[in-house]
Length: 263
Image 1 (cartoon, one colour):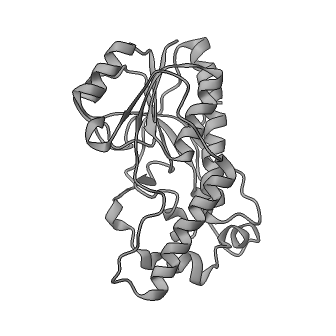
Image 2: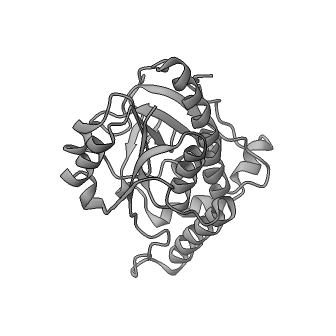
Image 3: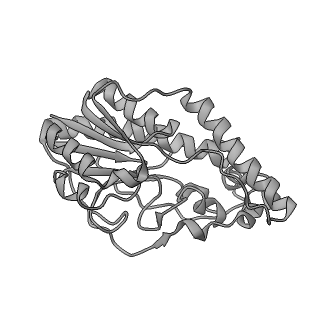
């Protein structure tokens, strides 16, 4: 079973890749060098929103370091590329040379031709978000903005030309604990998803396939420009980043997500 990884270089992406590579060695990896984990706020922001913005992304960096530590690139033949090189002849040639049976994707930009056409049928994306309810960008933020932290999770799905819209194979949510912040939940989602990915690969190795589930409903496809720093007031001003505690204490009501499970 030849597995190729395509993903980003943030700690969460490399944690996922390295944990899988330990158990199911990759034949190769394409690593997209992503933007910084600490974006700069718009200088025209109100000072209060600027401070929330800085707090939010500094906390993300701090928690990713806590949960994932320093991560190296996977120990395999690796092609490092930038965003503009992802969907290029260079990347598609790398795939053709590897001839993978299975491609695992996590944390890269949207895959398009010519790269898309070179991938095998079994090309599985880990989307951080419960599709179709939360598709697109920042999909571990939006469940908190809409005050349903129990909907922070992930979806393993086949890739097609439309973002986050391929057939499902599995969904994951982490166990919420009383002191979890928004970024604790984000990191724990990645860890739970990684554990589940190893189980999915064991099934694939034995059966050469997974059960497939078509997406029902459309949900919302969140774009990058849907996020505004002012929205962080919900997380930090109203809830002081203790929304999980409020939910577990029964002070926030949310229906239970109906998850697709392979096991």
